[in-house]
Length: 218
Length: 350
Image: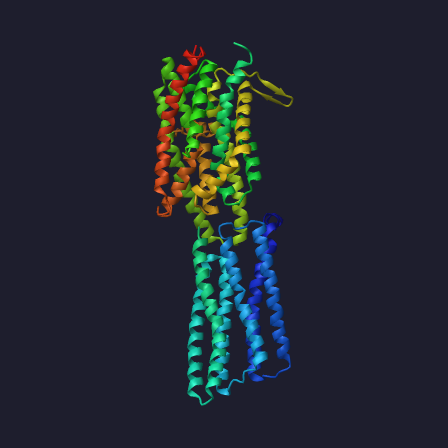
């Protein structure tokens, strides 16, 4: 064990940082799902501000961690053949948390008054987007640890993204079948899009990850 | 003959040693340095030390074979043969053609035999020429087997990308060190092999160590190779690592390992006696080209991957250079021997 520790001493901290980076994205996504559910239940709940502030802090910490990881990889000249790919992957993996944090702020600023008949669908849509992000983190983790598993996880990302698309379509239909004013229809559709965009983003990163995985195979 | 003259004659060997170090170290550490997996300082230091160790400890086997091909009995002849090889290597390098020092020196020795009317041991010559085909083929075969084994192992074991990166670095250094040892052991024969019959050095007593006169000669030749590595190999390493070889670090490790193993096969006296004692055919102990070994290894990996990534124009240029090198060295040596003997009155044979 001591030999192993010494042999990989240089990269031990880096591996731990990448794990934290992925854990944080995964847990922030679940945290957002709970925050959104709380918002639908009680739009003026006193804890909402604190929850969004937490997401904001997580996003800042994530940016800092990503820069540290990238600097270390670059400074120590690690993985020269895959360095650019890994850097791009980490940059892209920063986007879902940005999206979650931005949605959190929109909830607080715009306080969208979603009609009751959309709540279940919205919760379900948010759940699908969060699941696709969760499987994306698993796929990225597999890219670093066991590339044979990448495909299993990316398939799930695609599956949940498709389900998110279906729910988004269903919500749109319900919105435009209702008698609410057109401005509200457009606004709710656009907000729904932003939640579904998280799953689209996860799918896009997945496509990139699959190419990087092919390159990683000797 | 003045006492210092043999040492002056030896300068052509040192020139050849220098150019060999400058060129062939690129075959060992080129991909590692070019891909920035190993720094040039580490590569140069490891190569220098291991070339000297390899030459002094195991250099005698391959060196004697060249001595057998042509017993150049006058140091003026040795000087001319090595100078013609060094000039051929230098010109080929200038022409950006891959260099095989072994072929150049063999071409020179045969030219000396022809010039002085000595008989060339055709059996030995054909054994040496066989290795020009055998070495890249064996190297390719070793690379294919090693690549398949490693690929299978990596698919089974889940090694973290960054752990794999560390392991590859250690692996490249280990393979490079082995390659440098093999280069010293095998190619020192090119540098000093023809000086062995007229070796001017007395044995050297270094307290706990006693070097025979042959080992002193090998040490000096290895020093020249080391100087070539330290002073001039960086640029060529970068060229080999970034322009010639489009390999991943792991494939580079496989190529360098296969190259090192095949060089070892052609210089290990122990392996030869082991094979002979087992009644198996042994490989001739001949200085083979490390360029041929690395090209063979890369070609092996390329073929294994389906052959699409192989740049056949580069390969044909390399193969052509393997034909041109001994022929040029032969012709240059004939010309130089005539000039040395008839114009400068230098004795090139007894």
